[in-house]
Image (cartoon, rainbow, N blue to C red):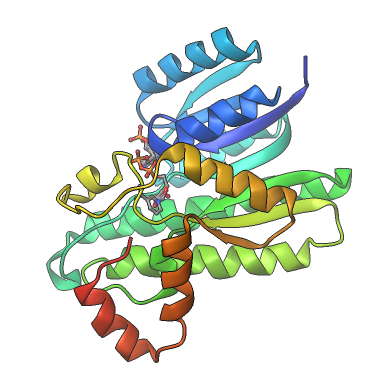
Length: 253
Ligand SMILES: NC(=O)c1ccc[n+]([C@@H]2O[C@H](COP(=O)([O-])OP(=O)(O)OC[C@H]3O[C@@H](n4cnc5c(N)ncnc54)[C@H](OP(=O)(O)O)[C@@H]3O)[C@@H](O)[C@H]2O)c1
């Protein structure tokens, strides 16, 4: 049995479950992180039964620095070969009407937790000359997004941070990829408070396929799905103010 571990945040639903399943299928043990203990335990049992690897549930609220520190302590006991920074959520609505506490949690989770966990694992990966970090951003990263202003800004951070890291680590043997999904069929929109987004959604399996292809090809950034990739490319050609105007009409998540 493999001694290496993949740490997957947000592994109680959606994309995180799919990442955990895929990496376990490749023979890697998995440390599953999220707040809902019951969900994590179910996912861990299923993975152990189907893939025969170790699967450990690690309940944690990653908006809290103390719980992030406890996770980092547990990670330091393991040989972490993969980190999937997937946990994230988005607030929806006008910024000035959004609960400040939710905004704080959104930045803590989407930005601070992702940065802290990356800082914790990368030195060991560099020392071993191997490892992979998957940073989950969004097509929202490519333009300012009125009514999801903070969410889009946090994902722009993930895109810029992850891409810089890809270059910094290029010759170390450590791989980094930023994956930018468009609308995908998970609990995301329900939790954001608007499940009426009717556009075609991709599946978690498709997003993970795109991620793994990009990781194998050493690409820094992958946008999941051809229409999403075309939109992300076209968006960048317009000035920021125009991007914001257009995004308000054609919301892209
Ligand atoms: N679905 C989409 O359309 C879409 C598009 C672009 C990007 N994304 C990104 O994809 C990633 C995964 O989202 P998803 O679509 O799979 O949505 P999801 O089903 O809502 O999954 C979000 C995961 O994050 C975890 N999480 C939320 N708050 C947390 C906290 N405070 N501490 C620890 N874990 C927390 C959730 O678990 P608990 O509630 O159990 O804590 C859950 O496992 C996110 O970063 C999201 O921004 C999604």
